Amino acid sequence: MSSDEQKTNQQWGGRFNEPTDAFVARFTASIDFDKRLYDQDIRGSQAHARMLNKIGVLTDEELTAITEGLDQIKSEIERGEIEWSVELEDIHMNIEARLTDRIGITGKKLHTGRSRNDQIATDIRLYLRDEIDFLLTEVTRLQEGLLEVAEREAGTIMPGFTHLQTAQPVTFGHHLMAWFEMLSRDYGRLHDCRARLNQSPLGAAALAGTTYPIDRFYSAELLDFDGPTANSLDSVSDRDFAIEFCAAASLVMTHLSRMSEELVLWTSAQFNFIELPDRFCTGSSIMPQKKNPDVPELVRGKSGRVNGHLISLLTLMKSQPLAYNKDNQEDKEPLFDTVDTLKGCLRAYADMVPAIRAKADSMRDAARRGFSTATDLADYLVRKGMPFRDAHEVVGKAVAFGIENGLDLSEMSLDQLSQFSDTICDDVFDVLTLEGSVNARNHTGGTAPAQVKLAVTAARATLAARR
Image (cartoon, rainbow, N blue to C red; front, side, top):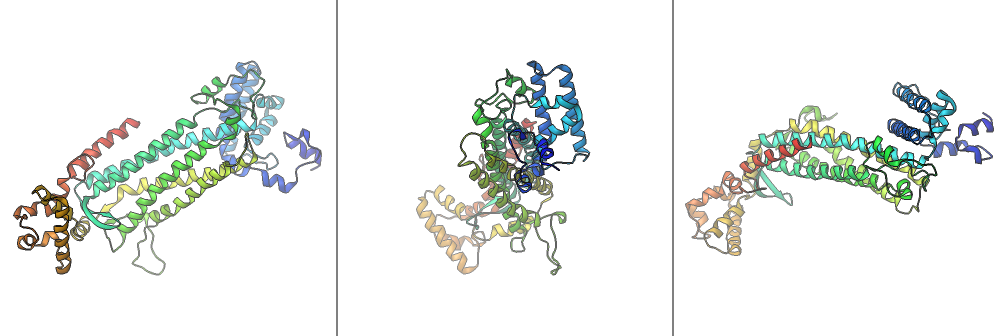
């Protein structure tokens, strides 16, 4: 290929006297990864063309040729018939060149009143909006699975932990509803992020707007944006909406990682609290007894990957002067991988969670160990008139006695308990049972089975309101 021929392939090449070095062309090209934006790029171009027709820049015939030509190109892409060109750098140039090949000089009119700077900013917002909509449905699907298990296990008693030490009895359903609440906040953050990014940069052009009498409100309306962005410099140069999404995604992954850690612990022989379905686990090549919780482990590991992408984007943006800089080509790969990773993790969890089987007997046995009703005994003494600090000391001595004699509080006789305080009577056993402990916490947010069922009902109403 001659220099002149290569220059004609670059639609900005008029100012240059020599072609771009072949390595530099490959190094600076983004088509290998931004080609996934083809749908958004075509939608944005069709809206821009309709706006240009509205203000008289394009005739009706030219508009028809452009919109139909772009529809045909989209079909070719989806059939795998497009050969992407590194020389044309990116998705915008590839599609525009293909359009010009198809419909002639009219295709060159499409870029009137815009730049690749506002074009890519628009494409990424459209892409991220589409992906957030899907992610919100997956968060909801996971929450629906949690509600299913939480309702089924509303009365299944397990130990609650602080510092991973047995603290107080809770129910498995109550524990799962804690996960539900985490995801509710995640849903809200993603939803808020979507609202903030839903402004159209189209028409900001390279950095200062355009001399053409464009109608940015019209093109924003065509693309279902809430309106146009307010400042052309900011429109093309900031990627805070992508950073905000990655921050929200990092929190989702942090919550999924915490869930994963508990699932990994609970499936171990040492805990033996739950059984995961075989289809979400793998075996060992050498140890035939093994059933490894690979899905939770991998999700736990992928949280670091998403956190890394957030740091990458923050670092990418932190020193950029206004307006657009080539640095921003580096925004797409971490963003795309964050989206793909989060989609995969949410899908895996939404599929897996409803099939979790609780091992109620093991959970109950664990709750009986570790003096989990010690606080209930202290509360019992307080209700009998003893100051809490004194009650705390009495119960501490009873626990020490239990450790020495291998007895849980509920296994001690009345004579054994009353040696620590004559306030203790035979009604103490009403509060030392696991059922008595969880049922006593019968208030909003408490672990009583009745409260868990009320929480599930309220949560279902919340999910129904999203539809």
